[in-house]
Amino acid sequence: MEVSRHWRLKQQRYALVGEVCPSCQHKIFPPRDICPDCGEEARTTYQFSGRGEVFSFTTVRNAPTGFEESAPYTVALIKLDEGPMLTAQLTDLGEKPVEIGMPVEMVTRRLRSDGDRGMLVYGYKFRPALKAA
Amino acid sequence: MRDVAIYGTGMLQVSEHWDLSIIDLAGRAALEALNDAGLERVDALLVTNMLAACHSTGQLNLGARVADWVGLHGVEAYKVEAACGSGGAGFRSAWLAVASGAIDLALVVGVEKMTETPGPEITAGLATAADADFEVPMGPSFVALNALIMRRYQHEYGWPHEAFAGFSINAHANGARNPLARLQDPITAEDYRKARMVSDPINLLDASPVGDGAAAIVLGPAERVFPGGRRPRVLVAGSAAATDSIAIHDRNAPLRLTAAEKSAAAAYAMAGAGPGDIDVFELHDAFSIMSALSLEACGFAEPGQGPRLGDDGSILPGGRIPVASFGGLKARGHPVGATGVYQLAEVTRQLWGEAGACQIDGARVGLAQNIGGSGATIVTHVLRQA
Image 1 (tube, chains in turn purple, blue):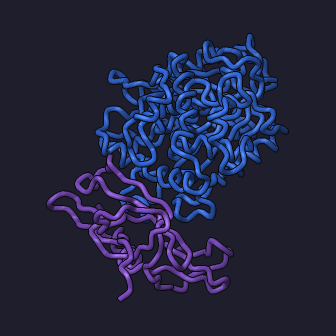
Image 2: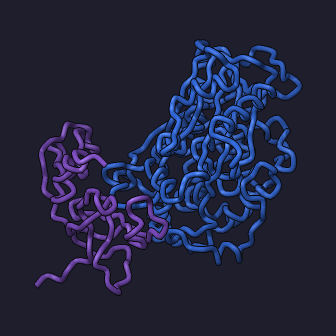
Image 3: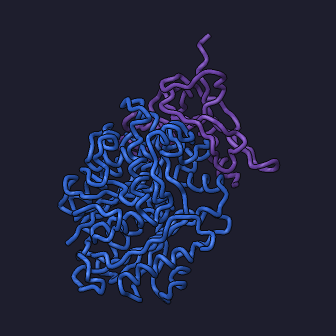
């Protein structure tokens, strides 16, 4: 597994850095060069808050190579508060049943490992939002 | 552009072919189609395949390898890939080549070899149809991606899981009459309810089985009196392809197959046909949710109402819009890169009146729709008896 491939996504994986379209103010994640909303060029970085809600979810029992040791785990579509959606695992669920609409927040966790001697890949997962103090 | 006709078809049973390599599979289907067309030579060979690049013992450059194996020495040949939509995409490429006049006779061969690779590797291979940077690293299987769509669809439209049973029951009933089907046992509503959960809400009977398989079609100009002329002529009346964002999370309408809406509308327009003209529809029922979404996208149901057609008998042989007439992906099997070619070969045989026990009476216009990824690349064809 190529190190650079993960290194160049570190801003997104660790910090949810996307873009905001200078033309239409559409928030973009993952970043791309053209705004998917208005088609104008979009290169202004934008820091997402990491808060959102569950749009849909499922449990993976038959995991792909590299994820077997984590199975079963929950994968979700998360609708970020700023608008875009992303795919992520849910974590720290405890006994809490997952529901569509459940508020969640981003945390950084290990995504996968390539055996005992391979690379560890970290990135975002989402957990049920903690109540504001 | 000139009219293009189908000259011949070949299909192997979707199965566990331990005794056949990926080249043997492709070669046998190709030779069957050439023989069916009464031809020894074509001017171009297109091989469609998804997973050969993912296997540790993989063979790429499949075009040249298959061309050599079937004796088409020196012919132009290469692979067309669009994940599970490879077959439809390859057929469309062959159609473009013949319709343009640049190529006279084209052979498209869809092939996939899945059963000799360990399960997790196949699961990882299938996931390459998704976004490799922002979906795959989060660990969803391809089933899980479809499950995300199905759960939200049920949530928004209020369908219980049982509402999707009709798609699976119909596919298995039809597959039981198809000697080339991977699964040839009918199932009951009770079987569907009790099936093992794979990735909730998708259970084993919502999901199509993998398998080894190959199917082939010969295309040529319609004006020529072709050697297999004992049959009604089947023309490619409409052909179109469209794309949507590869990642579900990037789509404006994640519960709609907008690439299917676009390619179906374009294929209908080209054929001068509409949903009311279609006698048989080979849809991409990789998962039962995809049957519902395809029926909606092709104009047979309003958004959110697809499951009704599975429930009220519309999709059965003899119904308003028979689907999966040879078993569909669900029962005929889903050798991913070959599936689109199977669908088109099956529609052709329906229109030739050569569908055996799977025959839909009076089928004159057929629709085939092949989906690559969870809705990213969608190819739609209308075939018509001329």
